[in-house]
Image (cartoon, rainbow, N blue to C red; front, side, top):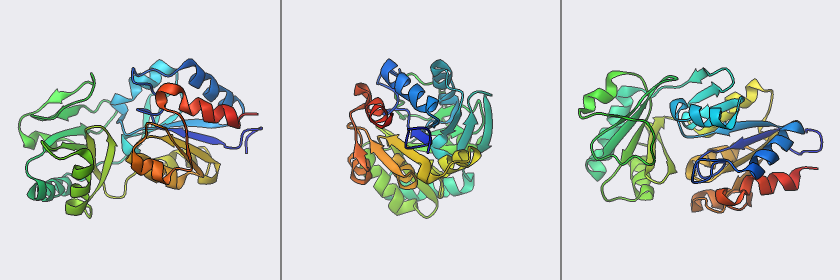
Length: 267
């Protein structure tokens, strides 16, 4: 236990949790995190974004700690700009999983995240990308398999995210992990991979355990992290599935939900 603060590790998701809709972190939340770290706690960002889509945000925040990226597949040292660990998706298994899902629900719109510090995100025809994130278009599905991947993103022309995620688990859950990380973001990952696996690796590097950890999140992909941590706090804007397993609800990402909890816990 840190000095007057009941947790030694604060794990925060980024989108919908630490970040406001405009991509910023409020002064109040920055101050609360700074006070908690001054009291001896470590802060680890745990995001579904792969490193190339996370680096700029962390640099803007002046964040120099460890970050768990790519839905748990990557541990990144933000201060050193170095990728410490990276798990890739077996491309033959991924192709099989996609075929099984499409056999059930019909053709999918596809995108994929290539491995590495500078791995590009490939966007196929019809795939709707949220925001202004950098991406490279592709037209031939064979292009997807040309280099190592961390994950595949799937969208469907008519199914909701919840319906697509459930159908994908039914069709291919024995081959890949299916994660829902946000609006329009259903992902196929290496089997067994989750934010919890990445967070446990990062925590071990710091000599910290689940019992030391409070975690904040907003989407179903945060459920394994909540199961791993001693306490899971869902934002008021969180998905119903995450709220159902949370130990506590706080205010939204727009209303300094993380700060509200940390301020209460600080001496």
